[in-house]
Image (cartoon, rainbow, N blue to C red; front, side, top):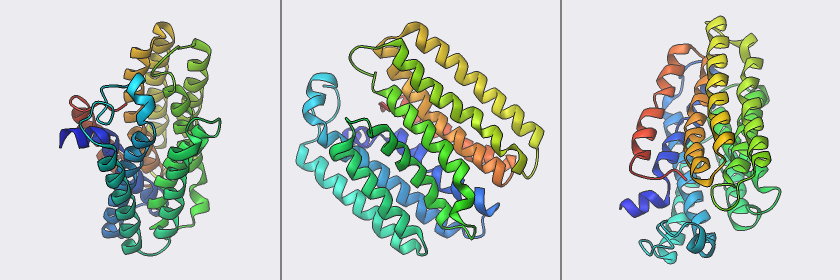
Length: 287
């Protein structure tokens, strides 16, 4: 079981659970349909876990040399088991999206298309980071699809999430092999722009706009400190640890969307997802 949880990156799955509520609350402002949002959180978890399992199945030959400790190259999970699990999880996510109703199934179908295209062919091309950013944006859009507002009203959060995750994907490519400071700086700059871009939501904050600006400044300072440390060290081990921190940061990005669309209290509740994800990361690697 632990090998399976490592295969699907359980801590990362926990961070994905925050995306749908964040998108919903940004457009709706409060939970008028918590049941549907719960369904969509399940969709996010299934599709994320299935996508990661499929990713490792596709990269199993590369991981034998670069990441031999992972479940597939180490023999803890067989390729057939990984592929069956990936397909089952992706189908389960689609089924849950149909059960949620409304526009959810269409967004989930687009998300599955992006996941499969990334894992099977685009991961190692220039388009890979862009597609991965699109996957996470669509995960947020899942929540928006359950709200009564128009998806077009959520373009700024979707764009910021896409920029952050695309930049993080570029940055994470240096987990193994040669590390170049210039390439690290490019990924870090993109993530920094996404964090600073949260200020564009300040005018629409429903309560505590001044505190929201302070929150964004604090996030920017934390990002800057991490960025300076990583560029200074510039080794694969530091990059791998930083990737885990920056993945946890996606939850704080989600919480910022919730603050802008709902309230700081709802944002604090969502940000608490960092705690179980970080605890799980102590036993199960995030990268």
